[in-house]
Amino acid sequence: MAFGIFIHRTDSIYADVPSEQYQFPRQYLSRARRCEGDWIVYLEPSKVRNSKGYFAVAKVQEIILDPGHPEMYLAVIEPGTYLDFGDPVPFREHGTILEQGLLNKQGRISGRAQAAVRPLSSTDFARIVGKGLGRVEDDTQRVDPGQPAYEFPGARQPIHHLSARDRVDQLTSRVIRDRNFRKTVLRAYGKRCAITGLQLINGGGRAEVEAAHIRPVEYDGPDIVSNGIALSGTAHWMFDRGLVGLADD
Image 1 (tube, one colour):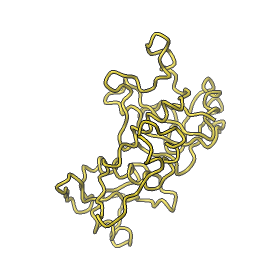
Image 2 (tube, helix red, strand yellow):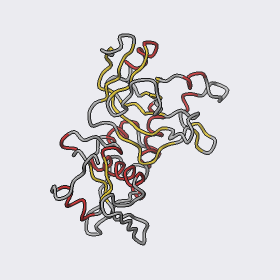
Image 3 (cartoon, one colour):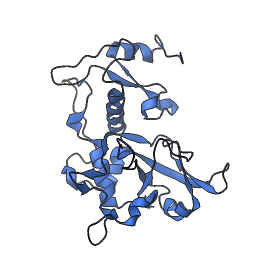
Image 4 (cartoon, one colour):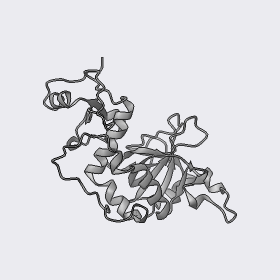
């Protein structure tokens, strides 16, 4: 097993559904197979306008032949593992390439950067995921002062010293997944309740709204923006109890 990079763009010609599957041609089969049972990071190409850079992470469940296209293959994503980064990570940060494995001996970007499927070192994986998950203090959730603070896996270690496997532990933490889901949903809704239209921000800059899953996690609802809605505390309570709902129109 090994970590990897899957390049994806929203206007891709391939049958990609990042939270469910990633389609690729035979030339990438051996590389993709190394990622079976392990985690990959999605990257939007730099040439895409307003590129999101490294924008999500997911675990590859298996590699199969695409039944609808015999010349293509599918990386099947393990249900419930896809997660949009709360803080998308740029390909370059302050002029530095975060994916150091792409550099040649001269310190320049090698031809490996053109590969849509490629290996990712554990060091680069830990660095990118760490930046994507952001910091606990960046959380936009309202916090009850009487509640004990949640300590995420590896919290007592210096942030730069967390290993790749420490990061994997974080990716399977419901608390951390909810925090990142909230950040992406609130960003999409401008921190405004989708039902009341209210945008309430406290003195510390934290939003009053919460992020709700349209299809609940317990019913395999994914942690993706399209499955989220920003709701005020009261609207969220009513939504969870079926007192208000959503329709296609």
